[in-house]
Length: 82
Image (tube, rainbow, N blue to C red):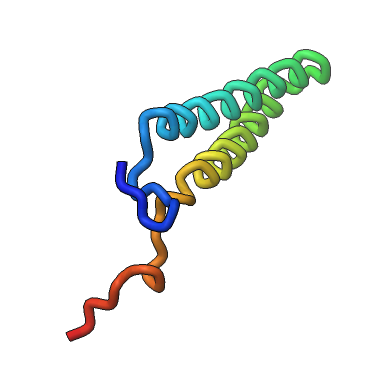
């Protein structure tokens, strides 16, 4: 585990599990709520698909939030200009 200024340079197993859990949970919840909405409104499979898409977007945003501290921008790294 490398620390540079109090910031880890590589994600640990817990962070990676967090990415998968956040993404999978968001997608599953979106589909579940969409199926429930479809049953209530009789619009199958429209709301399930909408829930899936919303779950993917929310999951991707959550995954980005978890891995963001480990991604360095080019302005933070050393310059490689010759």
